[in-house]
Amino acid sequence: MGIFKRATGIILSAVMLTSVFAVTAGAASKKDAYKESFNKKTGVLTISGKGAMPNYNSFYNAPSYVGKKVKSVVIKNGITKIGEECFKGMKSIKKVTIADSVKEIKAAAFSGCKNLKSVKLSKNLKTIRTSSFAYCKGLKSIKLPASVKRVESNAFNSTGYYNNKKNWKGGALYIGKHLCDTNKNMPKNFKVKKGTISIADMTSSAKVKSISIPASVENIDYLSLLYFDNIKSFKVSPKNKKFCSVDGNLYNKSKTDLIMYATGKTAESFTIPKTVKKAEYSCFSYCKGLKSVKISGNLTTISDFMFMGCENLSKVTIAKGVKKIDDGAFNGCTSLKSIVLPDGLKTLGLYCFEKCVNLEKITIPKSVEDFDLSLENIYIDENGAQIEGKKLTIVGYKNSTAEEAAEKIGAVFENIITGEIIDYSLIEN
Image (cartoon, rainbow, N blue to C red; front, side, top):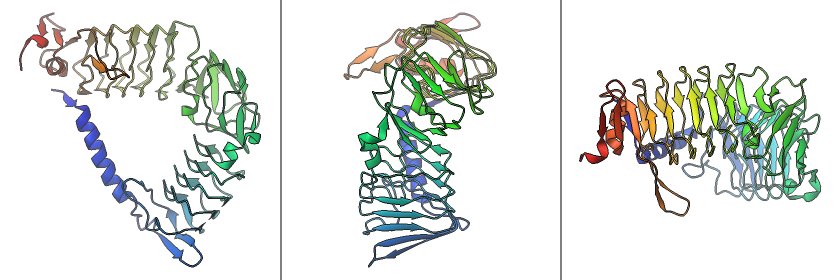
């Protein structure tokens, strides 16, 4: 029989696991051991040793130097990574010096250090993760070394540099060779500047119809491309070695990864190419034109929120070979009335059919072992009102996970072999 994941149970388990992880994350291994030294008179905090600094989470655990009046941070040679949230919210920090051994600054490492005015970055720094320097309002000048290949979303949002309107040109904010954000002033046919290495972030604009990506771009934070609802095409230079465009949709160069569908297109049907083995998070979300989609079995996982909000999507064909449908994959597909899940499918994620208020029939193969109770067609809208969808019929094998699901949520069960109907909504537990 199937294993049913109640949402509350999963959330509680996730919180407990996160707590355990967060508490232990601060303990560096011997291999990655490092030392902290704080000079109370000068306010200088020195981090030395070898390997990566640990990750922290300000809600569950914090480094030993939190609460001390740290004015300056010196990361000595030997440290390779600055951990998540290591200095988050430390308002007293004014200066940071990072040795050339550091190759990565992890998420939110200096976020909220509002009085930080000076940062000397490693000459060998390669990656700056999401929100690393967000809300550092005192940081008015930023110079990135040539070694940096990837900057992620919100890395420099709300810094002094970001907030200075003079640094924005043509609706875009660049820091060196990195596109860090866009605003409502971006043109409808937006062209990323030649020589740009990474696209860290782009704030969506309803007027944008196309985005052109030059040959120089090596990295894209894919979340930056979400919610450009009217975009009709991504245009990629044929000389680009990492990405390409086919019929206006964005792929990696080998076409094994579908990065983003141009959701403003009017095409009513789309077949995911057989070359595609991976589709990125939310890559079709809020596409209004699509009515029919065919999914190749070479795509083993339908990713999180992949078709969320595709309100006109009424026909989905999923080939054998797909093993997993992730959380919220078809959330809000209000035109979807029936769907047949393929043999070999193992898992249905949390709320993958939530708000599919017109879903009347779903065929679940006996291979499915694991899914939550979000097939129950009762939802709470944004105003707190309860909405009840169509009465659901679950088609499947007797004594299978499918029948267990029907019994649990009070749906109709239809035996796929005999056609026998059992309405579990009429049977008291």
